[in-house]
Length: 113
Length: 112
Image 1 (cartoon, chains in turn yellow, purple):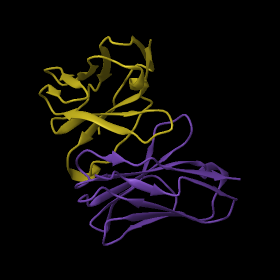
Image 2 (tube, rainbow over the protein chains, first blue to last red):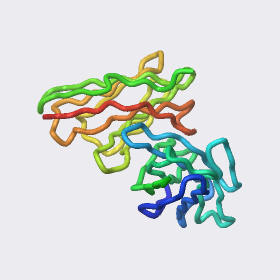
Image 3 (cartoon, helix red, strand yellow):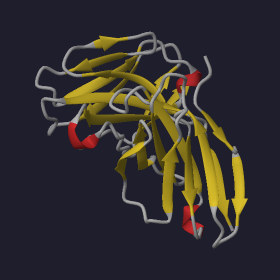
Image 4 (cartoon, rainbow over the protein chains, first blue to last red):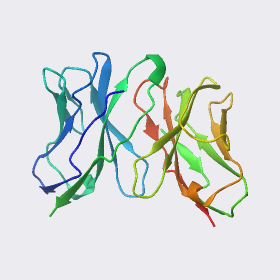
C-alpha cells in the first residue's frame, strides 16, 4: 500500500471549513484513499473513501487530484466535536493487502470556538 | 442497529498471565480485524478473519492468536503478557474485509 503523508496538526475555527491535506504520490491505480478519524479514547470512525472521483457524504467531501497523488478531506462546517486525529490511508482493494488498515501518525485537528 | 461491541471495556493483568478479548461484529458483517493501539501511536494491525479463516496477520509474536466463530464473533488471545502489551485493543468489522471497517470502542488492557 502506498505511503501517505499528512501534516501533524491543524487548527480550524468553529463553523468554518476544515481542509485536511494528504499526499500519496506513489499510489497505484487500484488503491483507494480512505479517511478515518479518532476522537480521544474512542475507536476510529470511517469517514469517506474514493478512487479517483470526488466523493461527498453526510460527513465530509473528498477531493482527489487528477493525477491522484494527493487528496483533501473537507469538513464543510467544523464543530468542536470534529476535534480528532484524522488518518488518510491508501488501500489496495484486493490482492494480498486484504483491506488491512495501515495507520500513520495522522493529523490532529483542533477546532476552536 | 447495534454497532461493534467489545468486552471487557477495561482489564488489568499481571506479567505472564493470559487474556482473552471478545468482539461482536455488526450484524451481516463476515470479517473481523484486530488492532493494537499503544498510547500516542496509531492503531497497528494484528489479524483479519473472514468466514472463520485467518486472512492476514500483522507483525506480532505467536503469543497473539485469534479465532472467529460461526456467528462471526471473534476472540483475541494473548499469552505470557508483557508490560509492552498494555494498549487499547480495537476490533473492526466489515462486510468482506475489503471495504470500510467499523470499529468498536476497544478494550483497554493494562499489564502490571
